[in-house]
Image (cartoon, rainbow over all chains, first blue to last red; front, side, top):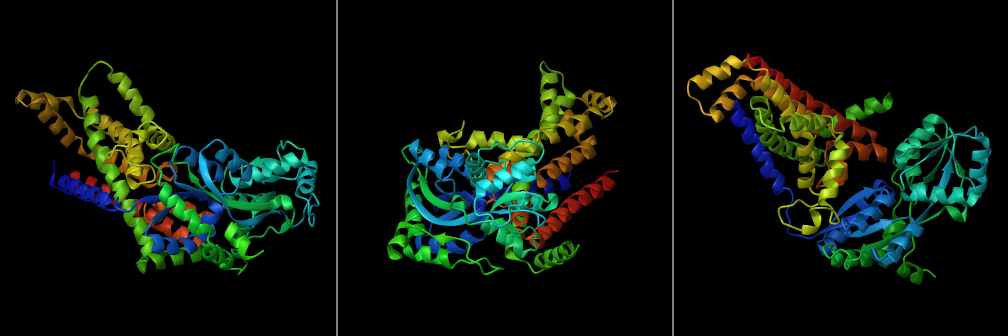
Length: 281
Length: 235
């Protein structure tokens, strides 16, 4: 081998060694599988340092759709879940995969769409009626199509409207909320979005207005739960338990309520744990 | 257009001011892809040389497998490693210390090795096969062992081998699906340039996304510049 080749190999080996150093195995990992909405909004970056300081437990956040987060829990690849799809969560706990499920907070979904509003849904407060009108007008609608909590909520609304959405106007994107909002804007389409992600984009100059909001069906509750250690003995259940206690404690709940969207100053999540409800009857 | 310019400006500012978040990601990208390239070449170069120099039963099949691997969608490699390492998967439940855990840099290295090795092996095979057969006969006539023959041929084909390394590195440096799946894009642990770009775009932080993109583009340019320089000296 040439001297240069030896040098390249040496550099590579040094990098390899560095890679090992980068992941000290000393403190137990706590893997939190959560939805893109809690992470992308900056909420976890704002909350987690306090937990890490208090307990010394390093939380590793994997931000995916709710469907994938539940799947990670089912396979024992995550220790604790923070998700927003109540029906699926109940099934998950019912099948024995999850334990210690607790309410944490809520925000809401809104329907956004083009200013011209070809389906005439602006101002409606009934999401199912709005969806039915969009379908009747065959106005373009972008769906997440990714089994995320938002997608599950959307399917629930279609069910409520008694419509199986099909046709050229119904676009199943298979992407995250941010990408879907961009698609809806480019296509002049309607879509269902969580308010937090929408506000973040609004601050960046997003153009589609909110057309429908305030329906109880659009309520978006978040729950936390631990992956059942009896199913997956290797999960960090102790860490998960401490995390759940901390997240639902009055102190953390107050911080959730105080968290506002950086650019607009609007609150993004409303605290809703047992401890919070007891203190604010 | 204003977004793009502001992004470029902000990206360069972050890069030059030594922003710890950005540099942490750059360093980790270098570590993960560097490690994957070393392991991939330790596997791929000998395999490519073996296939290019010798005839053995089943060689065609191995060749076909390598060609298939060269066209493998990286995200499929990610899925394979995910299913392998998941606690509910094939190797995960064994819980052995030397098997990487999911959502660690080691798991990402494994996925990248799976992506890069067929490329390195395939290009090395082609380079070795292209060496003048006379060289081989001469070295053999001088009484060289098979290993020495292989070494001589690889030396002769070094430009082709270098190309194989650049192709391997290019493929894993720019890949996002597999490392997202098995790494999880965890801040300070498994976040690399491509997954960070995806996240920042999703978050609407286009300036940071563009900044990271500029770095990725620059790295890719440096790798290729280095390769062409070496090529020039090899002639």
